[in-house]
Image 1: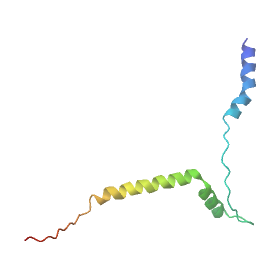
Image 2 (image 1 turned 90 degrees about the vertical axis):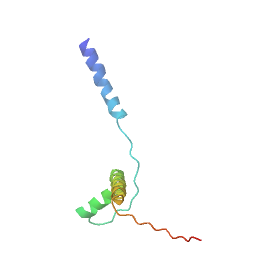
Image 3 (image 1 turned 60 degrees about the vertical axis):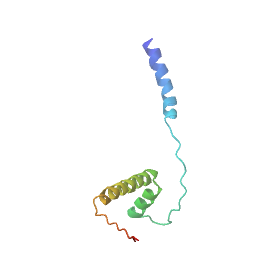
Image 4 (image 1 turned 180 degrees about the vertical axis):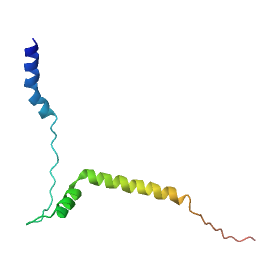
Length: 85
């Protein structure tokens, strides 16, 4: 009985591997011809990475929140001009 269960589990393993496979969207980009330096390769990979773009957007949003909080500490100036009769 134990051998039958192990055989069934082993036969299903390739199916579980296929179920976990995700198809990534194709990224169309222009790659320079000729030799590619490490710096150029890193720059291309960072520009094409959606995770890096998301992280940059989160950093920008956090910086905006910090700027907004700091603006509350700055002095405020207001003026009124009026005429009484």
